[in-house]
Image (cartoon, rainbow, N blue to C red; front, side):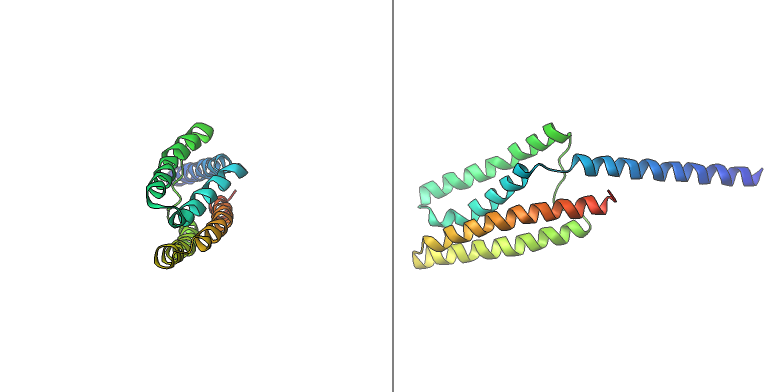
Length: 152
């Protein structure tokens, strides 16, 4: 009698684990973004880096557009997949995010110094282009790591 209870608990545990793995695989498939979604993230990061090259009134407008894009992207993701996955989550994806932020914020800082301290409008634009590429590739890497963590 006691061994039947153990067998039942083992069966229930295996079933629960299989259900969890199935749900994670479904999330991984749903979380696969189209290329344009990665490019939008890259454009936002590059745009932020380039903003110091813009004169102050237009810089505020550009920053407002970039900030307004965040809830639009969240809504788009929810409409497209039924969910929005925060990029800053536990696991290896957090390491990817930290790397992206260190690089992108470093480029933004350099952009600010060059534009605001040295009246250099070219360097922020070049750094902004690099930020687009790094942001896009970083977003793609984040997705790969996320899907890999889910075992899909």
